[in-house]
Length: 164
Image: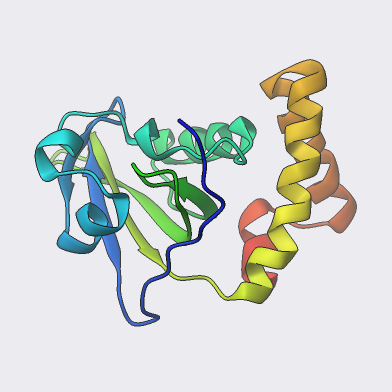
């Protein structure tokens, strides 16, 4: 899909909510999720959440998210999403596993808020570095670069995000 370079924004007090199954297929999206994505509810339900993946996002960021939530842990992440019309929107996502009554993971739940422009300006250069690494050596090269950067800073990804 062609990107437009146009950013969509939403209110600071608004939340984008979605749920997926274990494979990342969308099972629920609130009204704001549907509206901002530009897709209809029917187009979204059953579609992979990656339908919203913007080409500016390094794949290694999603690898980190998946590894974390599949272990039953929550994670906060900054994500640039792609709407159906090619516009984009930034979110600060809180992604958590959903559990059944026996403690088994049955899906994932994400609540997303609008990040500040300062946070976006800080994360964009990092994501560009990670994308460059991925273009040279694949997703694992980007992932290793991310771990290297975090190690130099002496923080986890979440600590890095919270410090922004």
